[in-house]
Every structure is written in structure tokens, then in C-alpha cells.
Length: 126
Image (cartoon, rainbow, N blue to C red):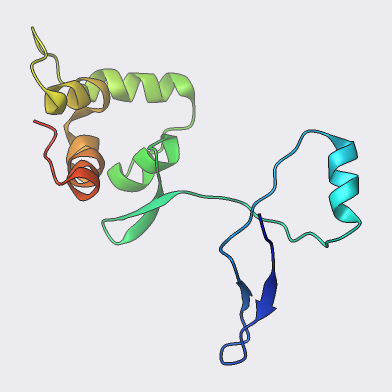
């Protein structure tokens, strides 16, 4: 793709003329070749959702649960315990809402999945 940056005269912000461009490689030879023509700016990609007035990691992880539920989970074992205590048990799963609640529980379903699903596809998970 065509990569070109410029400084916006009105704001002074570095802009991407043709959209954002991210570069990934595991090959030193490729990295060295590109570096002959460009300088690098560190980029750390984060996907977040604005929920309950704060930006939280999406997809949900331990940090998300701690931020949304006021917990202090620190380990995978503690997260597994929290999930086991919050997952909704069904004799038979009949729809997407029940599937989600059986995996992440009522709280995360209501705060994250229910609204995201509607936002993305204009459909409720049920």
C-alpha cells in the first residue's frame, strides 16, 4: 500500500494521507529493507469499549472484569473461579443469549455482549 504521512497545518497532528498503515514482520531482512526508506514510530494497538464511563479492554479479560465488577482478580485460577460462580447454567442452550451467559455470566453479557451484538448487527443475541 501507499504510506504517506503529513502534518496537518490546522492541528499540527501527524496524519496518514491514505489511512493508517501498520507493519508486521518476523523477518529481520524485510525490516532492515523497509528501514532504509522510513523511520519507525512505536504503535501499541489496543481494542477498548466505553462501558460504565470508562474504557475497558475488549474482548473481556481479567482487567475488564476487575474494572466493571470491582473485583481484584489476579490469577487465571481466580478468574476461572469467578466465571464458575457467574456463568448461568442451562439444561439446554436454545439461543445466543443463553450461550453467552453460559460462558461469561449475566453481568458481562449485559455490559458487553448484548449491546455490542446489537450495535454491530442490529440484532439481539436471543
